[in-house]
Length: 201
Ligand SMILES: N[C@@H](CCC(=O)N[C@@H](CS)C(=O)NCC(=O)O)C(=O)O
Image (cartoon, rainbow, N blue to C red; front, side, top):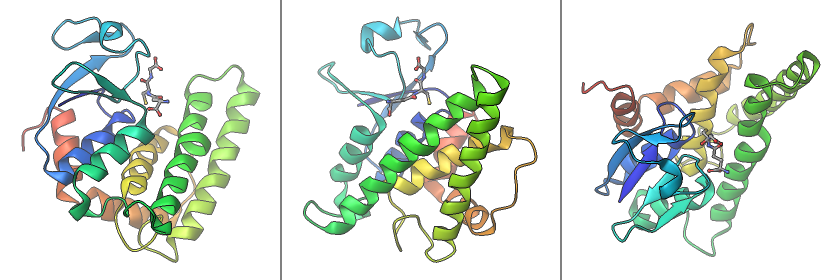
C-alpha cells in the first residue's frame, strides 16, 4: 500500500494515521502544481482527481478522499481505537467532526490562500476565527475533539491547525493550543512529520 502525499498538505492526516496503526506502507511525494510524482510519474495517471491523499493498493487500485481513507486505515487496526466500531454512536460523532473539519475548516483555507478578492479573504479569515473559537470551547471540556481518545478527527484537526501559522495576528486559543501540543508529541505524529520534512531523526 502506498500513500501519495505532499509535505504538510491534508495528506499528512492519512500519513499520521498510517504511522499510528503500524500497518506497513510506502510513500511517494507529489508535486501538486505539475501533477508529477517523485519518481517522475504523471499523478493524473494514478488518480484523475489529481489530489492528495491518494492511497494505492498492490493491485494498482486507488482510494481517494480523506474521509474514506481515514476510515479505511482506522478499520484496519481497530485495536488502536482511532474510530469506534460500526454501530456505536461514538463512531458517527467522530465522523461528524471529521466532516466538519473537511467542509467548514479545511476548505476555508483555500479561500484564504487563493482569494478571489481582498474582501473574500477577510470574510474567510473571520469565518475561520469563529470556527477556531468554537473548537477552542469544545477542547476546553475534552482532551480530544470527539471525546477522551485520539481519533481520525484529531489527526485532521491537527493538520489544518498547522496552516493557521500563515494567518497574521492569530488570536490565542488556549485549549486548542494545548491540544496541538498534545497531538504534536505523539510518536506517530512526529514520525510522519519528520518523514515529510525529509528528516530521519
Ligand atoms: N476532497 C478531497 C480534497 C483533498 C485536497 O484538498 N487535497 C489538496 C491538498 S490539501 C490537493 O490535492 N490539492 C491539489 C488540487 O486540488 O489540485 C479530500 O477530502 O481528500
